Amino acid sequence: MSDILTIEKLPVEVLQQIFIFSSNHNFCLVSRTFYQVVTTQSSVKTYWLLHKYNYNYKQVLNRGLKWKFFNKDILLQLDHLYYQSQQSNSELAKPATFIPYNERPIPSRLLSKPDPDGKAYELVKILLERGASPDEPQGYPLMKSASLGRLDMARLLLSYKANGSICVNDYSPMVISVGKNNFDMVKLLVEYGVKPDEKSLEISVKMNLREITQFLLDHGAVPNRNVIAAIHNDTS
Image (tube, rainbow, N blue to C red):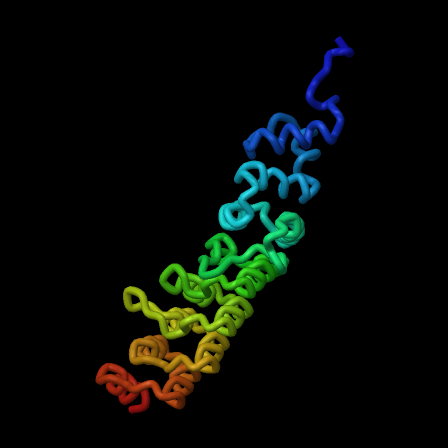
């Protein structure tokens, strides 16, 4: 019985090729050994994506970004292979050195949770450098960054011309930041030209955020009747 060939006994290279040509991400769950073999090297994941999406590099990038395992290393490997494929095309005078990402949205998975190791930030920065939209869809990137208090991500998005004044269903990055009592985020938005609005001021007054309230007033927020009444009651 010991001579029976099992999948674990196949050479590592064969196991990797089986995974790549399967185009099925669940195939790596066949056994613990198989999982370790096919997931420890980023190059295996790179070629798995290429095979799955028929070596269409733009599609590989667009759709590959949705996978949790996609990271900077895989992107750089794809760029290298893309460049090589461009070199083989004699009609191209100057081969592209990276896969473009013009006007594409930043994947929500890179924005939807804290990023303690900075890997999501690193990937978002590369995508923005390649022309990714800092706003699509509907201001979500900056809205979510404000909601999570991701100051570094918000600064990055704003530096790539994200619309800091965007408002969706009465919520804006400023309104969210004031509601979270995140003074640093409020100051960052103003630094990038966002004008404090009436609703943000009203929220700060209702929450008794005196420092933020004064800051908003100093930077052009116009108080409405409710705000004036609240300030009057607070000082009387």
